[in-house]
Length: 124
Image (tube, rainbow, N blue to C red; front, side):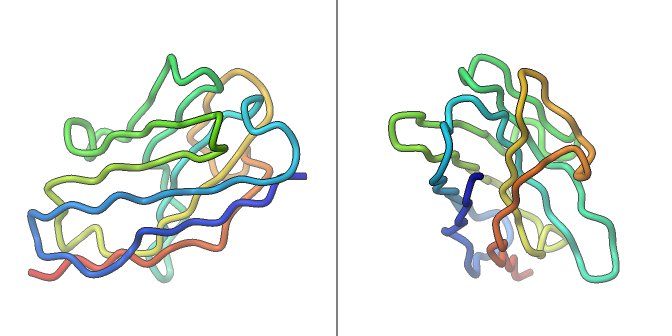
């Protein structure tokens, strides 16, 4: 069992930056692929980024490439999402997720553990 708690959300102006953190507790954090998703009201949960257990491989949804950076610190059992050049359309709740195994996935259903989310609001 893994417990995930996100933090770092808030209000930022368009073009600004936020850094989300996800602290994990429970079973060995370093054995999990970690992902970030976001979900707007009435919409499906959308893949944003993922990182393999070693941090050696990172994957991004096309619209965030070059603006968002995912990273992890296994010693601190924490995964981060640095978000730059934020756009108003990216206002939504961001979720941290974990899945067993070595490979990333973009489908939310393939992640076993979820945090409760953190709200990101980008004003125009």
